[in-house]
Structures are given as structure tokens and as C-alpha cells.
Length: 292
Image (cartoon, rainbow, N blue to C red):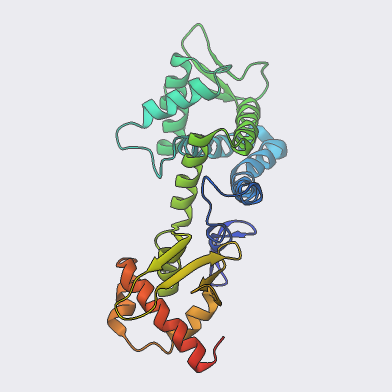
């Protein structure tokens, strides 16, 4: 959502809230806890909570809307687990089916997972109806069942419960530092959601290029070495071991910087070495113009 000139990735969480964490596999526990909280707020607030409201308001009336959200959510949860920005073209069925079997195996086998994808997921999302006689229900003691006549029956409340249960397990898995591959995939997916490396403004690309490396040292001809150190949880830089500069101060300084070609280079998010050289000059400008 875009409001007040800011991008929100959850109700009270902005794109910048996540990016500021500069999350890495080596990040401390408090950063991981905050990143998981942001993701939880996104998934609960945009999918699970609305599903729950729809079901408890009137499941007979709202069941299809709730199941549409459920089908969308299953795909994004699969992408989080696999570290995918999107499901590979032509492989949706395989990824979706494997996720259901492997992560919700108490409900889905190969046959049920395949039928759910084709009859429920594709039916509702592409045609706003279930396919091949499959039905949604809410008054059963099972979650998914294929009856003797071949008709698939899916309990809306039951699907909400198992997906909500999976999500809680997934969050618990992320807390465990031993789950390196899962954490790496989480970072990949969250970086894609926030477009971490695709800033909308010059300052974003400058900051991302610098913060991608925690410590940088540049040898320059006939001048003393030039170094950056990312400090204050990714909110500031320490330049040459002393001068401290924030992202906001750099942004202010850009107004005084005359080299349009260099700024265009920043705007493409490339040419990291010239960017770092430019940042040095920007820092000089800040000192000289007393912006800091």
C-alpha cells in the first residue's frame, strides 16, 4: 500500500522499516526478531486475520472469499520457504503440490494436493468458481476429502486452521539460527517484497550500494585512504573512522551536488566505486555547508 508518500508492506510497517535492518544471516537475534515480526504483521494482517473475520462473520456467505485469500497465501508461503520472488513459469502445479504434501502432510497426499490446486486454487482464482464438481463446505469433521464419486470437499474453517498452524510453525523455525537455508530464503523473499535493491530515489540507491558492505576501504592516488563503516544498525555511516553521517544528511547534501551525470549513475543503482567516491565528496559538502 502507498500512502503519505510511503510504501507500507503491512498495516504499520513500511518498506524502509525492513530495509533499515539490513538483515543478513549473521545479524543478531534482535534484528531477526524484528524482521520476523514485520513479516508476521504482513501475513496476519493481510491474509489470516481477514480470512478469520470472513469465516466467523458468515462462512456460508464468505467462504469463497476466504478460500481465495487462502489460495493466494499458500503460494506466497511456499515462495517464502523456497526463497522465490515468484513461482517459476510452468511449474506452479509442482511447487504448489509439493508444498502442500511436505508442509501439510497430515491433510494432503499427492492426489488431494493436485486436485486442490486444479479444482480449488485455479478454479477460484481464474474463474471465481470451483471446478470438476469440487465443493467448499464448513460443517464437516475433515479438512479435505475426496468422496466415492470423485468429488473433492474442502472445509473452509479447516483450511484456515491448518494454514494458520503451518504459519506459526514456520515463524518458530525462522527463530532457530540453525535453519540457515530457511533464513537465507526468507531474506531473498523479503528483499524482493521490499525491492531492497531497487530504490525509487537517488538516495536509496546510494545507501543500498554502501550498506551492502559493512566495511569499505578505498585506496586513492596521492590521498589518504577513504573508508566507510556502517553503524547505528544501518542508519548511519562512520567515515574515515570519525565523521558520522546519516542517510537523511546525505539526502540533504544531494541538493548541493552539481554533477548530474554522477547522480544519474546513482539512479541506476550501479557503478559502486564512483558512488562511494561521490559520497566522500558529499560528506565534504556537508561539512563545508554545515548541513550536518
